Length: 70
Image (cartoon, rainbow, N blue to C red; front, side, top):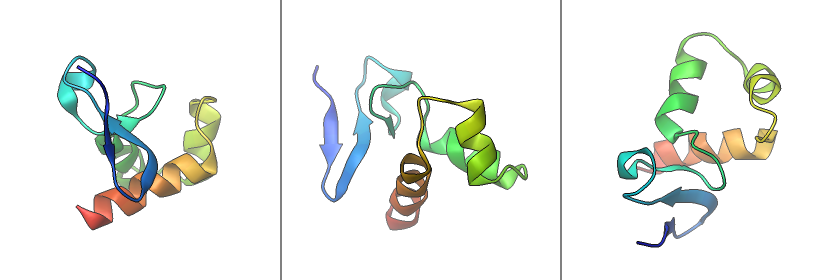
């Protein structure tokens, strides 16, 4: 099944064959929930991007905005 894209969020997708269908950043297995968990645990955006080089600051901010909207 193809990725589900969310209107207004270019990098957030969901696919039942990846990460149990949880919203994630396209091209990664990093879920929106994981990003929120890292932030709640005290990491800042720069630390998350340093830990996951496939991500950009924009990706992290889009995950935050997606979570806030949903």
